[in-house]
Length: 282
Image 1 (spheres, rainbow, N blue to C red):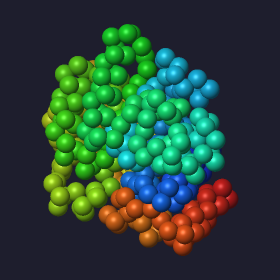
Image 2 (cartoon, helix red, strand yellow):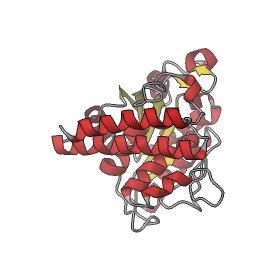
Image 3 (cartoon, rainbow, N blue to C red):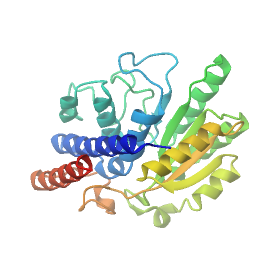
């Protein structure tokens, strides 16, 4: 169970991660803020509460692994890595620019803290399952986490990976689904419905839970239950809001892959700064 101090710390960091998302996409004049903002809380939780890692040694052999299967939401991951100490926060302003280490999708050969290069939807979860199996074969106690989008569940390779994970009893793997309900072309249930998500995951052999993805207490309980599950991979379906934290982006499919202009940038940063100040004053 999170203490009040831990919860406040995570809320503060999540605000900063969201500000990093807006900062990066504004300066890049491109990128994917909507899904990055919906995933900001869980990425913050993973890097500042859940995962065993060492920013001073990004390639530490026994570290936990994180695979951003929905690789286009790299702005949130980069922001978390920056605030965790992998590289300077100021570097977030170089997102997607020539010569930058922070490209539009994660590159494990370029960016400190990135465990797998991703971008082609559906492939990240397969590599995460392979990492989990490899850790089992080597007798390592590390855990592997993979974050997918709900639209990504439309990829057939995802379900092959789920079946593989269950068949190999990969209880060191936790699959996270960011169920914000929107993808680039609109609501997921209208494009090609993945529902019911939890029941499908269970049918493929995973221990599945559905939680509020913006509630740190709920996330903490879900990850604790996943760690305790033996002989079976886990899945956490997070109900989230696309664009969370920025009023004009919330629940809008149009912000899947569009950068804010100068006026929108100021509005977004003002809102997030106010939210940060409110949390810090608690």
